[in-house]
Image (cartoon, rainbow, N blue to C red; front, side):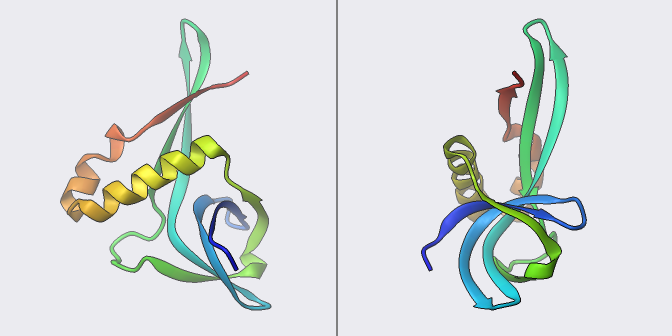
Length: 116
């Protein structure tokens, strides 16, 4: 299976963006570098904007590869080109920084999208 950036909507309500690396079994996906998607709407002079941030899905772990039960996944879609680029920047930055730097720069990494 080729790796691609995907968005998983989980039964818990969480949305994560990650690389889908393999279908381990008929019941399990193998994912890499999952990041939790958080969005915060803001009112600006130009209208409503949505600030999107990505942060670690599993805190306090050095692991990059996880297995997730397919029964926990409600929806699986390909990530947009823009989100994929943002995801790659975040993953690269998180790999190169110490855990303390990642926490300190959490609010620095943002992508602003205008809601139409």
